[in-house]
Length: 343
Image (tube, rainbow, N blue to C red; front, side, top):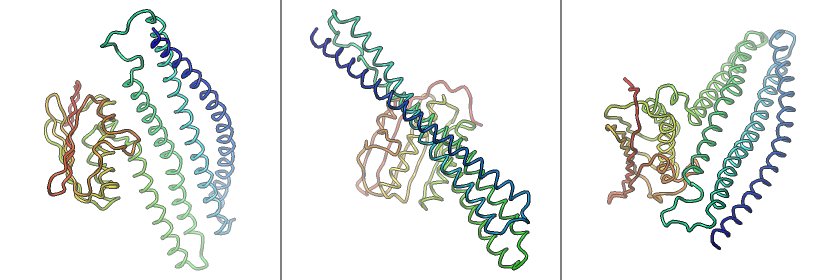
């Protein structure tokens, strides 16, 4: 009885703390939204300036053309940064709402069972798997939102800079050769930046995962790692690969993504072998690498541990360091119903 009362008191205190933090977040969200609106107004002003220059390029000096474009790109960047902060605050607010709901349910459960003894095999008052799923859902929603914003914002701004350079190239007749050389270099630089930005979008939230599924996404992602880090990755998929429930595809992709990044960036691996073996009711994943050994269940890039990802998938893993220094991670994930087959 005393233990139950103590739990009830702790839950009340926790709910009060969460409610106070939610009120603080609401104030922060309000002030951040005000700043976003101010920056959006500034962005509109710079956009109008770019459109003015674009409509009458002959009326402006070279520096004015580049200055207008740079100011617009800077305004977009600042607005995007502040919107990112706002999104993070809103994501935390949403998560706290879900946590508060779970705590409220726990309070009700404790109150209803205050006079009854707690069975030895009773379900925990707070379901940790639901709480963990809430964290992951919030992270994924935030990743998707940022990916879409970056695609519609800075990527378009970079494309606009390329267009402006082409306009400028036709305008400057004082020193045509020098102008063409400089502008060609600028266009090459911006195109490179645009490709890097698209790579960033892919790492953040690959849209191909929603469209084509896990295997095509992994092939694309492996290539981005090879290009970015200069490593060698031998990737293969055997068996009848198929579409999985969206939550499972995301969780498996993040698990593999985090494990690859961990081995490359923390383990200094240069030679990696990644294989996926599809069975009727199970997906086996093997990651074999060189490099230094790491804790088998350390915190990954996403902030979650490998075991936490596997808990969501109801999977299991083994970690082995062989005598030759090769590190082998083996993961087994049960496959839920998958009616759509990739051909």
